[in-house]
Length: 92
Image 1 (cartoon, one colour):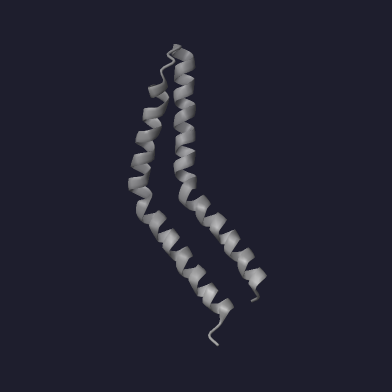
Image 2 (cartoon, helix red, strand yellow; image 1 turned 180 degrees about the vertical axis):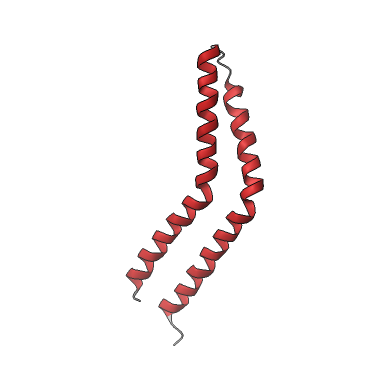
């Protein structure tokens, strides 16, 4: 495996890990924001904290629940990245 292939593979895997780690919290905050915006439009309550606090609470809960998965995914990616760096550099 040459350097360019290794870099392309590392970039592809880093994007996949980023999507796995940050995808669920972003989707949850998008859904909460949509529900809060709909609620604000229906009730005509335009309070800024009403949009911010539910997103903050959901993000905190998801980080607590998905923290071990996120750390495991990032650790596995880092180990693979270091192994590939050694394979590309070689032991001369």
